[in-house]
Length: 145
Image 1 (cartoon, rainbow, N blue to C red):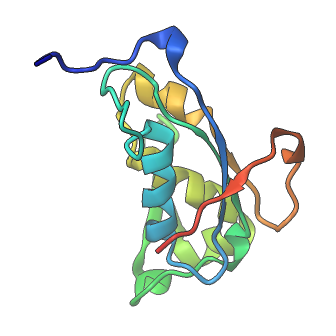
Image 2: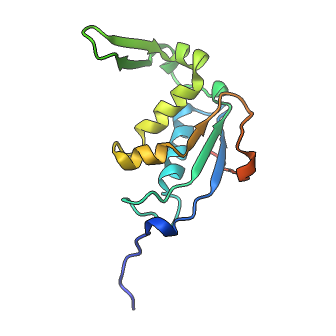
Image 3: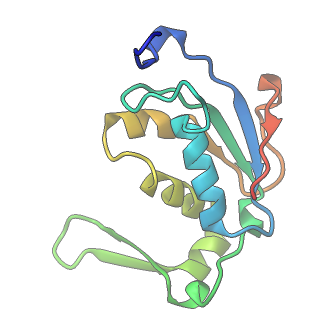
């Protein structure tokens, strides 16, 4: 009986392409599925310290929804670095003007906050509409529950 735990090596990881349709789905649900795919947690070869994830394309971000009263109450905050430089953007404005950024920030918060997370985030492509330029990679459709 072999009692060794499998650990993926950097060169032997195979990555696929998945496409997620965010139309009429909650932003957080789509973001968690994307983060799971980017990390590779859906694979039996998942290794926490190696990028075993797949490439993810998220389309129709402009049609995603926020549940509850988040559309009015949720704020996106960032700081310029200067005194009094806190900027606040309501979720309703963010989803109107830049829905891709809202989705990108949601997924980014669910990935590790280190160099591995930054490497995994580079595999994410976000589009506001239904058109994307990654047809050559033959992405498979991933259904969000």
